[in-house]
Length: 214
Image 1 (tube, rainbow, N blue to C red):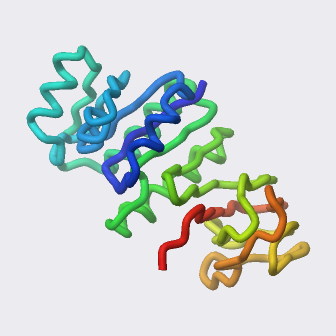
Image 2: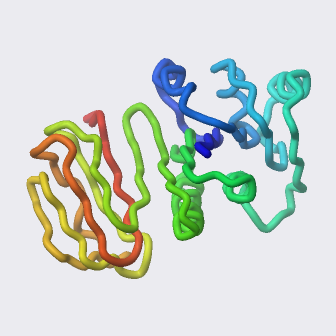
């Protein structure tokens, strides 16, 4: 089951999102992400969160559309995006795409990426997607759908990621160990379309920048 989560981060070019809408079986909207859902004409299966950032008109839109609302108190132990991840896992998601999971709130971006690793370990394929950036969580092998000249960065999300091998990059690696506290595989350049990233142990975040703005 392919699930989409609409979080309340940055989106960019909305036309890009419209072109992706037929790819999902179920959709979860997170609190203030309802604004983007409404703009895109999306009626999600669930609206989840403490509703501290949703606009009244967007909540009314969801209620009138008959969206199932899972309301949580503002004082809680989890972020709204964590709640959405847990709901998707409970509902049987096998793949998760997250829109608006990155943005200007660096703390939320880091929290979202690290939280997603829990569900990756449960066997759920997870990516954070946007028009200019896709973040893949990888624990074995990834063929990056990148073009020559694109920028790709790797960060270890576990204490260490071992057996890291790169093919099709300006700076190749072979059986390298990346440490979470001291990244060095940043800003690599793709030299062959659809380059390959392999990791034998641990978890990698692979950042694919499709457009670089100076």
